[in-house]
Amino acid sequence: MEVYVAPEVAEVEALYPYVDGSEFRGLTIREQVKQQAETLLAAHADGDSRVSMQIMSWWPEAIGRDVAGILASPFSKTDALLTISREYGFKTWEAIDALGSKMSDPEFETALDKMLSGDAQSLGDMLKQNPALVSQQSDYGHKATLLHYLGANGVESHRQRTPLNAVELAVLLLEHGADRSAEADMYGGGQTPLALASTSAHPVKAGVSEALNTVLAA
Image 1 (cartoon, helix red, strand yellow):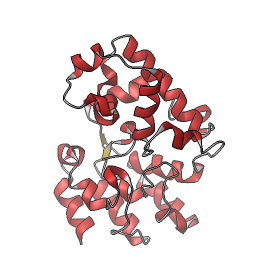
Image 2 (cartoon, one colour):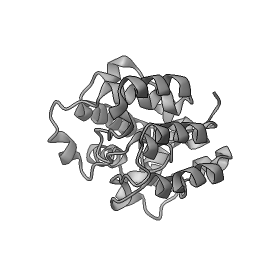
Image 3 (tube, helix red, strand yellow):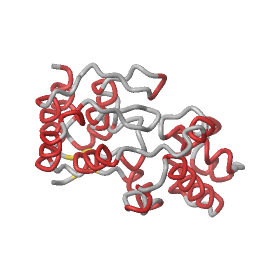
């Protein structure tokens, strides 16, 4: 199934080619964020413009700056840790550091991978085998459900992708009991799947926004 990936999202994917690998997935949340922060810090030091999406979205000091301004600004290890922490829905690095050895749930992560690649058949099979997946929340700070992730908004940058069968996937999740009114904690909290999808540019550019919003609002 074809998936719409915005150029800036593709740049993030290229900057972190390891995030879908088994080694990275086997790390604690703390170590995952730390590794990405190290990559972000090094890329910024090299003047790599692929850092722009994450820094402009999640670094508080980026407000009012363009890409050139961000690359010219001092950016420390503390800044990198904060940026990636906020991207994963945590307010501070300290909140992640306090998680210790906590890991993200591998089954939820696999279901998310299947969904974001547009694999409705595999996602449906997983939901049949484990119905609780449909209401499970991410172990990351934003606490997004699978339905929230379809909004491609407020979650990890590399996961802000829109399968062209997003409407089919939303219907599938709803048929298995997904809650349209479930709330996630990005942007100050209280974010429903519709609130995220209706304010995201990715479904619009993928050409599925109107139909997806209709399903989520029904």
